[in-house]
Length: 250
Ligand code: SIN
Ligand code: NI
Image 1: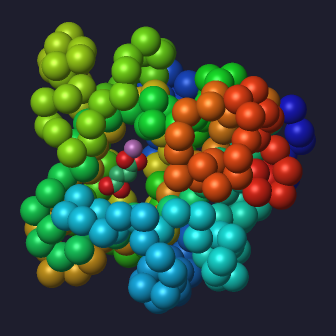
Image 2: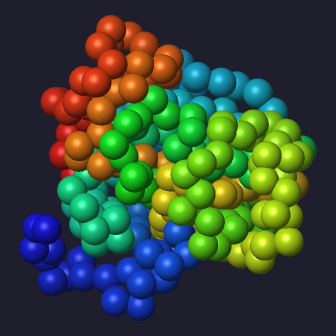
C-alpha cells in the first residue's frame, strides 16, 4: 500500500462503511466553484466529442480524459485517486471515465444493476467507481440509490439497466433489502464497488443532471476476451493485462 498524503486521509469510519456496505458518500471532493467550472467543461465536452449513447436514460461520453484537457484534470485528480486507493485497499488502474448526463425531464431512471458484469475483466474483485456531482443532484434530479452489503454477489449474470425488473428477476431475494438514496451537492462524490447494486432516478427537474464517473479496476485486471467499447478497438488477446498508458496506475 502506498503512503497517502496526510491532507487526503479519509476518516477510518468512511473506509469501514465502504468495506461493509459497498458504497460511501464523501462530501466536498470539489468546492462548489470548481464543481460548476467542471460542469461547464463537461457540458461543452459532451457536445464536442462523440457520445456512446444518446438516449432517454442518459447521454454517455466514454474516455473523455483522453481527449479533453479539463476533464482529464478531474479524472486524474490526486485527491480522488488517493480516496479510491484508501477505500479499495489495493493498487488500482483507471478502467475508463464517463460523463453521464440526464437531460431535463428525461423520464427514465437508470434501473438497478451491478457494473462489473458489463466489463470484460478477470482478476478485478475490487473495482471501484467514483460518481462526482457536477451541480446539485437531489433525488428529483437523479441521484444514486444503493443496496448495501450486496457487493459480495459475484455470481450474478449481467442485469439490464434499462429494465426495472431485471436485477430482481435474477435475484428475487434482493427485493426486500434496504435501499439507501444519497442526494449530492455540487462537488460531492459517491464511491461504489463494481458489484454493489445501484440505480439512479429519472431527472424530473428543468436542469440537466451532470455526473462524472471515474471507474477503476484492480491493477492486476486482465482482459477476458468479451466485447466492450473500451477494449474492442485494441485487438487484445484474452488474458492480456489491462495496463499501459491507456489504463494508467491510480
Ligand atoms: C447514472 O449516472 O445514471 C448511473 C450511473 C451508474 O450506473 O453507475
Ligand atoms: Ni452502474
